[in-house]
Amino acid sequence: MIRLTLVSFMNAFFPVGCGDTLSKIGLLVKAKRLDMGLRQSDFKSSLGISEHTLRKIENGSELVDLRSFMLVLWRLGLNEMIFGSLDGVENTSQITKYATGEDRHTSLSSKRVRLSKPKAEDF
Image (tube, rainbow, N blue to C red; front, side):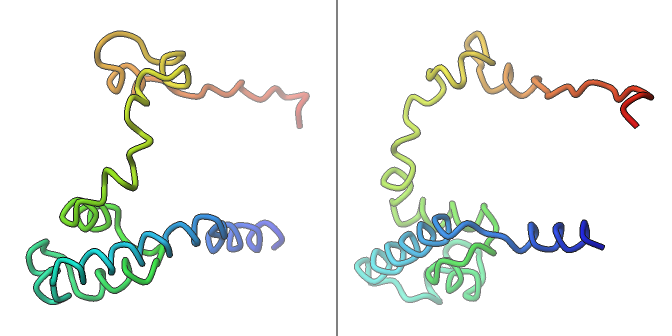
């Protein structure tokens, strides 16, 4: 019973800092769309997303699929502003200690966390 409650809590948990960031991005998205003179209905049609999804992004909801979120940022030219700090990340020590060679993504994708097998005396 306690485990089920903890699982329910973790499924509903969303860090305040993440919520604040999404709220700021939502404000930026709306301001940029307005600055470009785009109506929600026209903008959502050009991307193939629903108006409901666009409203959720502009309101900072965490319940938006990543594809729609990234399409909106890309179309408004905001992806560089939001994710600019990722430039060169593939050459940082956090990546290079696990990935080698030219194609770091492929090299890193094969890595797994291996847990030791439990022993009978552990029970």
